[in-house]
Image 1 (cartoon, rainbow, N blue to C red):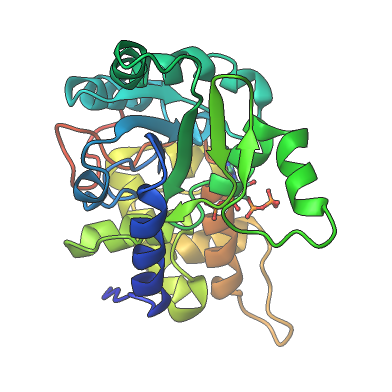
Image 2: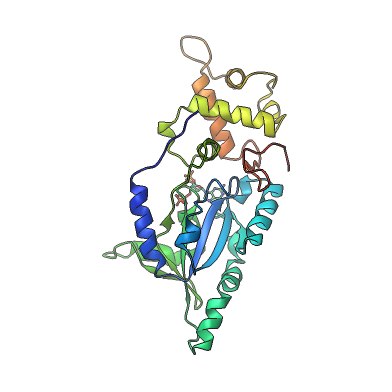
Length: 290
Ligand code: G4P
């Protein structure tokens, strides 16, 4: 399956981000915990040179525990402050303030030496589309974020949300663009739903997902749908259509519906917690590891 995707507005987004980065001390980078490398653009390392950095493994609730632990170690070894979160759950964000202080300790110390006390850290949330930036900002900034947006006459864009005495957050996230170094990256982003589905052949995509699951999570499709697994990926989709009574009006099975169902089950976590790539094996994951 050939995935090509580079929307024109990403160039504009990059320029906007270059401007915004000048205003901040800290980049809070969100990646998808199920595919942390595929869902991050390494250009951010250049864009964010000299800034304090933090990586949040978001949607950790959908990724395997083993995957979350392995990726936490991976990013920590690169010198980032790391946290796994579910951006929808405020409770999972509790520790962030102390992690922010840790990520910015050099800046805070620099300020202190210059006699600047209590200047808040200015932070920006960044990540590729659909990674959970808006959800995170809403949960993290809560009422403060809502207030900014709801004030009549206040244009959205480059407003600072004061979180407490120590932190101010830029209300507009930095949008990064996915980087398609190889087809497996595009494929993983497509599985996650981070690429506009409309341009993709969903039957092909679902067949690719079947092929991946057979290899990396053997037994999972059998368990979820009660189907035999000794079939080709396309035959498996047909089996899912039969198992889930996806029927066509004129007779026969509605395979495209089964394909959509499988993708939806994967994306919503109904298939279980699945990590698509591991640090030691950045291709599609080979072994069930959770
Ligand atoms: P973006 O601003 O980076 O583009 O992403 P956004 O916050 O819009 O989130 C994209 C989707 O991911 C949303 O679902 C959101 O609810 C979901 N999401 C964000 N963080 C998490 C997380 O940690 N765990 C899980 N399981 N889901 C998360 P949606 O279906 O597009 O919208 P909605 O139906 O939830 O409103």
